[in-house]
Length: 125
Image 1 (cartoon, rainbow, N blue to C red):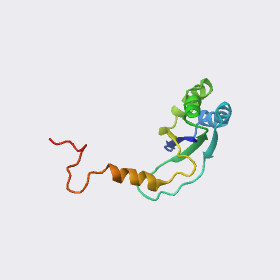
Image 2: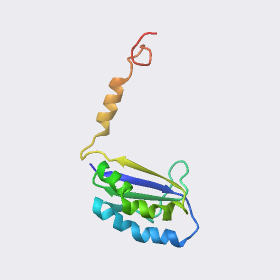
Image 3: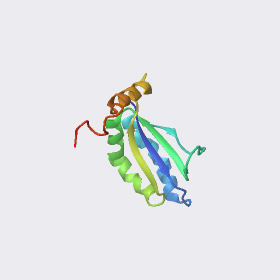
Image 4: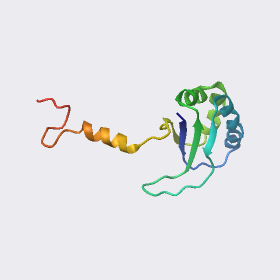
C-alpha cells in the first residue's frame, strides 16, 4: 500500500539553503520509489487554519517511507530545510485499493456498547 510523507511547513524568509534543499530532495526519492504528489501549489482552507504550505510525497509503502526518511542522502540535506522552516511532518500508511469506509463504520458500530449498557469494555465496576 502506498505511504505518504506529509509536511505542513510554515512561511519562511527566502534563504539559499532552502533552494539547495529543494534542488536536491528529488534525488533522495529515486532509491525509494518516491515522488512529489503536492509541492509548491496553493491550497484552500475549508475548515480551521492552515498557514504555510503543504507537501505530499508518495512512496511505495511504509518501509520505503521510513527508509527514505532515514537515508543518509535525506539526513544530509534535511538541516537545509529545518534550519529555516518550521513545520510538522508525518509518515502515514495509505488505504488499500477498493477501501470502503462503510466497513470501518460498521466495525465501529459493532464495538459500541448496546443501548442501556455502560460505556467501556462491558466490565461491571
